[in-house]
Length: 194
Image 1: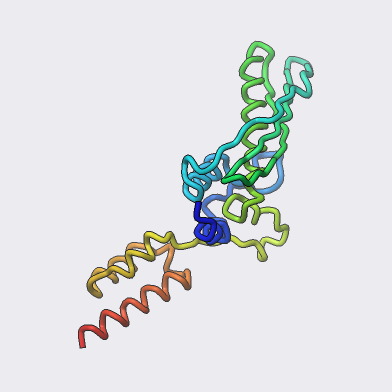
Image 2 (image 1 turned 90 degrees about the vertical axis):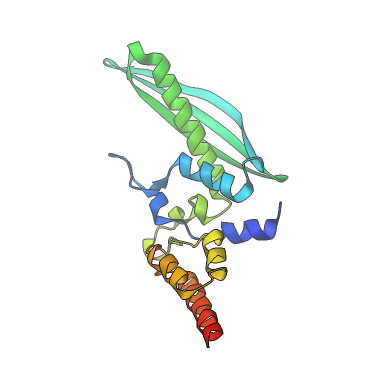
């Protein structure tokens, strides 16, 4: 694994699209399990990382009236090229006793997914580390330009194609890296025309 390339990716800000509002009755924005798994696959490669559940323990089974509450504690260990990180989380399942198997499943999934997210967040902002900054203005959140887009700017053959690339990516237009790359390539192309 090329850790210089990985390091560059890990230093990028968390995409605002990855931030979800807290569920009703909860606090704190969060990133989804789907987002962190996709980011791990993108940055480390699908076969470049793995995780294992190191602990899964039912913590409670409580009946409150007709409602059943199930709780699980889960520890997850993430391994990336010989580097390990661990995360721990609890999950809950709440509903009718007739659906007890589903409640266990729900609690286990929540605990495992959250433990995985906690382990991966230690690798950087793109995995949700930025959300731990309480001052929202200081969070490292924003869009970053994928390398494939930057590479396509460098290979544009004419100004018309470059302008199409610019207008087709309004999300990136406010990112200095994108703007600079487009302006630099435009300058090169117009210089060649003279």
